[in-house]
Each structure stands twice: as C-alpha cells, then as structure tokens.
Length: 146
Image (cartoon, rainbow, N blue to C red):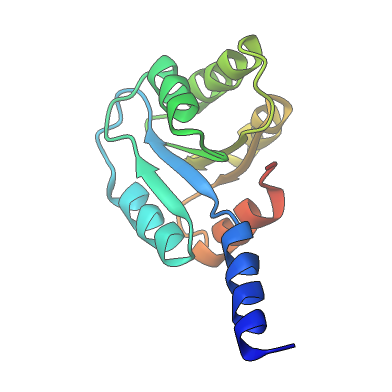
C-alpha cells in the first residue's frame, strides 16, 4: 500500500469516529456552577464536544436543547436537593418524545440512598462531590448509546 493510500485510510478512520456530544446542564434554582464548569473543561479535554446550558434551566429547556443540538449525553447537575424531582422529569420528557438513545448522567449532592431511585428512572452515574473526573469520563465513554 502506498504512503498516500495509508494517509487516506487514516483520515477516513479518523473522520468516521464521531465525537461524543454532551450537554452539561444546571437545572432548577441552583446558582452554583463551578463544578459544572470544571466538568465541561474535563470533558472537552477528553475530546468530547461540550455544550453548556447555563444556570437555572427547566427540564423542558434541557430536553429541547438536547434535541436541537443532537447530543449523545445529557449531564445534569444539581446541588439543591431537588434531584429526585427534576432529574426524573427530564427522563420522563425524553420518554414522552420516544427518545431513548440519549445517556442521562446525574451529578451533584446526591445521597447514596437516592441513587437507586434515580437509576430506576434511567439516570446513571449520579456522581457526588470529589468524584474523579476520569471516573465520570469513563462512565460516559462506556455507556454512551450512539
């Protein structure tokens, strides 16, 4: 195989590997986004395309943005204790729209006792403060549905 053919094959292989597109969202009345911004940078540095929702999003806004941006993952962050209400609402809205191929990942101050309930609603990860960034990145890479 010629050098030109090898280079063309490498370019083809590279272009066929789609980057993971992820929406990082701050839901509800949670005005703390330092952690979300750290996550955004880590995911970007890991080669993912990151869209940040900004603060105070509703579940409806998150779902609309995720659809419009054709994301593979929605990473939801909440520190105010409303995760058992707001995260499942996002999951239900996706199900109502018959969308099942977007990975939902939760994070924030989530008690261990709440994690099973969130997983039953389709929210994975449910990472708390101090979770290694590499653990979050690996979780997304290993569980993305597209």
